[in-house]
Amino acid sequence: MPPNHAAQLLADARARAGLSQRQLARKAGTAQSVVARIELGETSPSWATLSRLLAAAGFTLAAALKRRRADPQELDDVPRILKLTPEQRLIEVARASAFVSAARRV
Image (cartoon, rainbow, N blue to C red):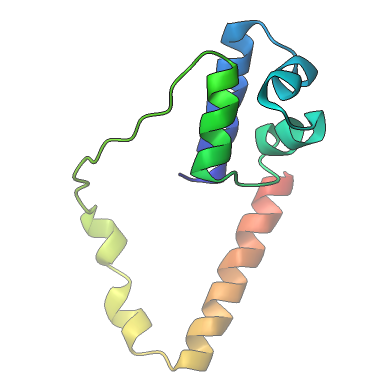
């Protein structure tokens, strides 16, 4: 599960349970800062941690497999990427990472 999904899931469950971060943390046997970091998307919890926190809020975490169809546009860039050297691919990933980091700050 991507971190932002976990963050939103936990924040929603906590709000629906009418609990503060401190109350949820106490019920789950952890620190309030752990709950805050997850809800802010600063850390990605393990499945076990997220399950424990959600259980403390009165919810159960369940998983289901759903087949995802690839968007043809997602594959348009594959031939170009395959022609790159490993070093060029690393540079491309670094640039994409820098772009995403900058976009999150906006």
